[in-house]
Amino acid sequence: MRTLVAVMIVGLAACNGGGPPDPQPTPTPPYTDECQNLINQGFQWCHEIGQQCGDCLHNPSTDPRHCELAPACPNPEPTPTPSPGECAQEAELVPTTCGGAVYNAAVKQATIALGDLTGNPPQENLKVLAAEITEQTGRKCIFAGVEAIFLLRPDGKYEENHAVYFGDGGWTGNGFGKFIGCHNAANPSPPPTVCTDPDPRGLRAEFVLKKHHQDWDSTYKIRNREYCHSVCSPLEPDVCFIRDACPVRFEGDPEREVCEEVMIGDQKWWCDGQPIESNENPAQARCHGHVKTCTEDGATCAEADW
Image (cartoon, rainbow, N blue to C red; front, top):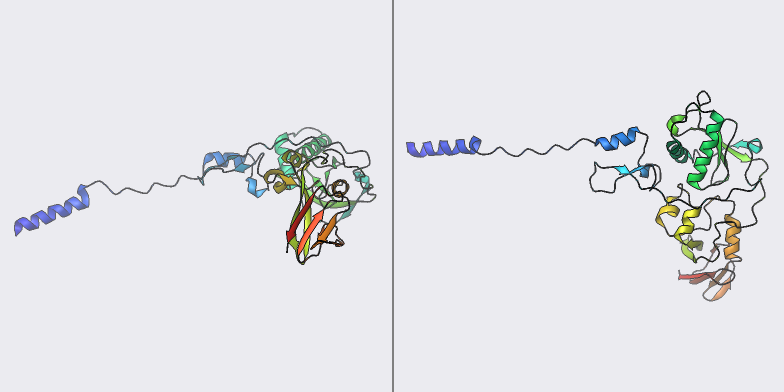
């Protein structure tokens, strides 16, 4: 009996301390220095500023602690210089209300690209900044005023941004600038009558049909990636970086109406084989059946069933 008790005690001792220690969980490494260093330099996550390329952070891996700079954006075709009178002048602008800053991210990205210009004449830095935003976004009517830059928004208003300190010429608001408000052009220029470069004619086009309440809604698109990049803006990443098809011009571009007129003409609609009138909006019509729509020359059509 004593022998059995002794064996049990020895066995218990072996279980408690004689074997290798239990493995301890590996501590999760802290947020990586590479990410924090980039954030400290002013870079932001791409998804936070509505981008998918360029000077922002993304994580293409499955490691939640990883981050890296996104790939460079493709260079769009140079935007033609607006003809004199196409854009408003600072003296023509009249203050109005607007729904907040649209161009914060664009101002930020331009100041990152330009770097620290502190010490340069402030008005010179405004001109350089306006040119950089124009190059990065491909938009027209972005210009330097006396104390601010003015940027034509998609809603047709001019956004005022005090992006430069007039004390030393440095960037304000950590690169985002100081958004002031919006202006309307007191004497807006007449709408353009010519669809200039990039010219959509000769490229593959299509109508996209979708149900819209009780009506059909059509969107005319050019299916050409190079063309889409030439008219795109980082404010519209779905047009620039995801899709191979895009409108003839982005929303707010003064040439959109004339370019659509060149490509579409008098849009035609049929319902169950019978011609019908479009709504007040020529891109919409009511049909509870088989609908078809075509450009005036019949070169591009689409059809669907309700």
